[in-house]
Image (tube, rainbow, N blue to C red; front, side, top):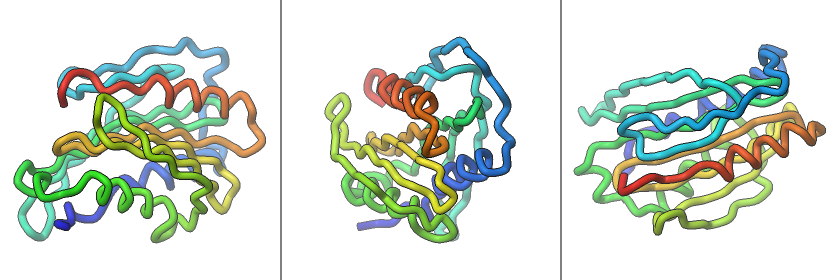
Length: 185
């Protein structure tokens, strides 16, 4: 298997956990849910507000470039992230979907994360391989995510929220269930 460089998606895990623990989450009481479907992204998702885009281009030592497109939103007692990594076509052709998905899941518990994976389920969306995971971070933040490998893109929809917050858990499920792959990415 060819590695596509270090998986940079771990920042979402840390950001969700830190935002909730430090109380940096801005209140969005009774927010209106909006559909996000950025042009060229080939996905849609429903979120309780307007997320902000963070685009990062990362050049590996090998000279290959990976581009991250992440839309994130901090809401009352929850953090949402949806987006994708776009890998070079030549490298992506050598990658097995199951391998990249499993490697990404390790990012939830590796490095500084030290989270615990509670469940991992294999799933498919529009015929593409995916994973649904639930994890608990050391600070008690619950993370739920769906990941999909589509040709040369690794898609992720993730929500983080405090363990005891039933409303946030329900909203996280609503968000994750709203994630769709559109067309043929």
